[in-house]
Image (cartoon, rainbow over all chains, first blue to last red; front, side, top):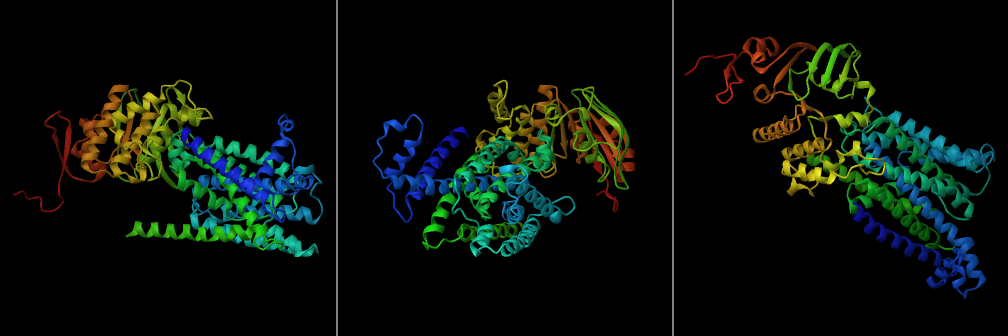
Length: 348
Length: 264
């Protein structure tokens, strides 16, 4: 397991750095990779004085003030959503679960949108107001969705997703309504319902980072519990797992990570569905690998998606959620098809 | 080892178990028998701590079962379910390793490092060496049940509960499985409680039998005391003959057909 983690992790980190350089370099002004590496290394304390700046101030401004915060934010959002998705899939033992299909993203977006509509985003708890309220509305949505879907103490895979989709379209309408009322531009509505990373400064990155770091580490430490749950809840209980409390805590942490991501970037769908599945195809079912590698994969995926979002129709920006849905929705359909085939095989 | 006092359990208006009194000494091999719906699985569920009795008390090693937390309990008592393990894509080795969960800290490490040797011993004993890296989903029912037994062994329990462990196995795997359990029990002085459907198999392997009928304790005793035609007819409503096994003398049942009793 450890050697697998090291080798996959090294490849993942390499891809992450490569993606980072490409995405920072690409844009209306093209920056060569060597220059970006110089600018970034120059900022590392203790290393800076060994590097002679041979780049223009403008380049440094572009990297440090415009591109890097956006690219890093995308990385953190992707990582948070992917890890949350992997955790939902593990706890609910439902391969179709992710923050978007469960309606949690939309639930969080409603909380955030209400705060912003009334101008309360820093009112109660300072910079924590937005993530905390988004978490509360997201968790309430998750609870409602699970309550709607429950039959005789069990939650069938399809009805969970169906309830998620119902909640999601209702809450999405609420968000659209609020943004329409606020007399701001159409862009603002698109931002909340389809996600965006444009014009986000460093402060957004700083808000999200602790949620990803602590939440991700916590979920990683519960990876063996998720592995046990894959054998069935009863089996897991017999093996020494406190099933109910473990499930509750993991669901809440995953929801918190989703809420933090949504409150800085709006609703970006399907990341948490596509990435953990890809990782699972490569590494197998072990959550000790799936959790950390999903974080890397989600980061890489969103950075590329955002690059596509801002450069395909430049200078017009495509909402980020449009790009992820182009990839994610067909993937979702493919998973449904695969499940159907598996059921048909079982019957025949 | 286990003491059940006056235990009762009901689901809604259905009385699944009534007034069960039962003592199991360390190292005994008990079979629990009875018709479908007689409360066998409910009793096992109570002893395994998955469910708690409405009335009465269950003690494990002198302590009330409710005073154990899940991890503590799993170090003392392991359960092998009827359906064993689902066909997941974890490998046999990974699944058996999961049996060590109650001994691991939050980072997955163990205090004493003998886990590696234990794993090897289990693989050897169950002849799983060749299957170690195969995913569970690619194994046959019998092989999967052996892997499930391996996971239970990795838990190093003092008590093992088996819920109709051979239901889905053919005769060869049934015997292989029971031999493995009996050998393990013999070596480690383990206490085994097994719900059994096959009364002849129960007679071969169990020291004592507990008979449940409609949620009540109908009888308990050695196989020779229990497996007599009168008892079988009153509990299972089946007529039978009992003959002594040529090897060991334990009773074996021959069933009587209801119609056309004529021989030759």
